Amino acid sequence: MIADQDQKAINRAEWEDPENWSTIYFSKLDSRPSVPKRNPKHGWTIYFGHPKGARWIYYLMLFFFALGLVIGLAIGIGI
Image (cartoon, rainbow, N blue to C red; front, side):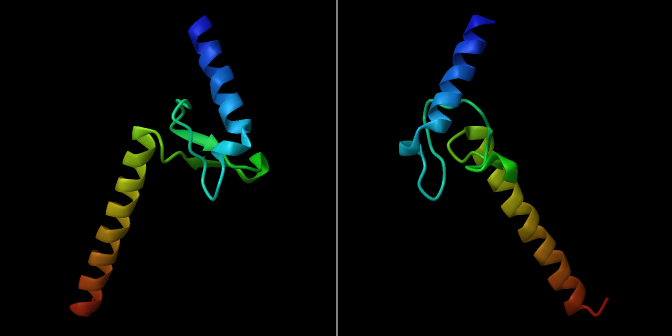
């Protein structure tokens, strides 16, 4: 329980540190697969620095590639 609170404090401190922000957020110490956007009112975003976040990006790219392939094939055969 204490370790969870410590990690939450680290995550929060890393997110608030302007050095971890450029166009995207990146911190090796942050353990979350998704993080609030720079302006939290705009929701959350996938965190590219976490393995689960990177996996999500891969799956999204695969999904859109497959969708484009299906639509392209459907148009090609006249459906």
